[in-house]
Length: 184
Image (cartoon, rainbow, N blue to C red; front, side, top):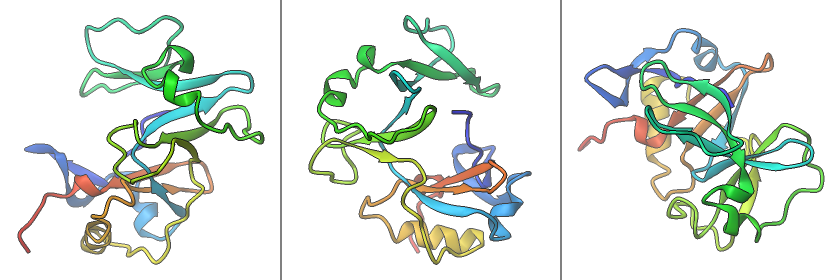
């Protein structure tokens, strides 16, 4: 669960948004390499082969929860990310209501989505686990303006963004909210 780089460089004056310059190391996305998949807005979970875990971010100065396992740290923000046992997470009660995939492989990740997760922007009628990388996005443009337009067309909340998966394991992402809102 290492941090996935954003395809385009962040605007240094407003880090919430991206500029039309490709992030170094993400050129492969615009070259059409890899598979683009839908990114859902929920909370990340992982099955380790025996136990389920929830992604947890720990802000600078805060103490991680018991049994938390750090995976990565952001040098810019000081935030650390890792896993905590799902049964002690804020999603524990919701998680008991979902069907767990019987074919989940150790280390496989899923997005927990539904009515009581992040405001349910996708409008799911029930809580469920969506396998990461399962829903392929097709007919994506290969440039900043095209991707901006494509993502702007999904304002109905059907996707949070796109995650590209390269055959060698690299990933890159782009979210709807990465682009500044314009009056155009």
